[in-house]
Every structure is written in C-alpha cells, then in structure tokens.
Image (cartoon, rainbow, N blue to C red; front, side, top):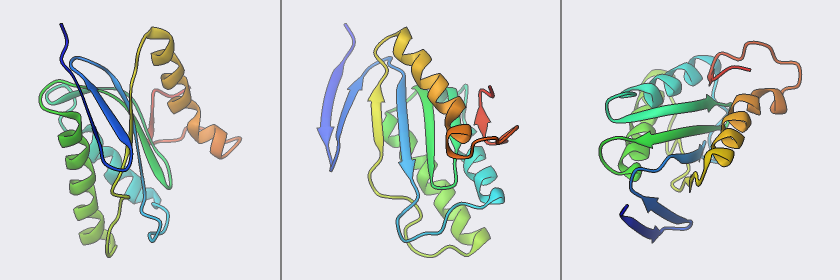
Length: 146
C-alpha cells in the first residue's frame, strides 16, 4: 500500500509514494523576467539528476515560471524542488547579477491521478509557449516539443 502524507505551507501539499507530480514554481514578484541564457541555466538545473534522482516526463521554462512533470526516484519531492530552486537561484545571482529572492517561496504541486490527467499535463506543458506567445516556433526550453 503506497504511503500517503500531507502538509501545508501557504498551499497544501499531498504526497503519495510512487506518484508523478505536476510542479509549478514562479519567479519572485520583485525580479525581472528570465532572459534567454537564464532559461537555459534553469532548464539545466531541473534536468540535472534526471534518471538518477528523478524522472522528468515533461518540462518548460517560461519567462516567469517553470512547469515540470516529474516522478521522484529517491527522496522527497520538496527536497528535489528545493534543490532546483536553490541551485538555480545561486547561479542566477552569481552569473547574472540578480539580487534577493529569485523564486517565490511557495510552489504548486499536484499528484497526477491517472493517465488522462498525465496526458492533459503533458499537452499543457508542451503547449505553454504557444499559448503565451502565439506563433512561436521551436521554443528551446520545452520538452516534449509539439
């Protein structure tokens, strides 16, 4: 029987062992949008450890937020998200001169309940750049590409 637990910061967080999660974290309101090189850095931060600590089914790094469809393989989701945000924030501060909090403290996550929801989240992530910028072609910070 899978282990279930819940906790709350500002948002509720549900954990179900062996689950896939749809995760969203946003740039802090006091920060400017992520530039092109910054998005590459954030994408590399999220992909680091893929296949070892986690498996990423889909991801997109937008100008002001990140979506990831992820299956933690070792450790807790909150530890994984913390490492993405902490490592990328540190690098963004050092390499691009950002000051203060880079990411909002809280993040959104949702247990993906079934295949239909998984397909919906995959399509949402893949289509996010076109939804934001109609006509964009070959957006480099999204997987899978549609």
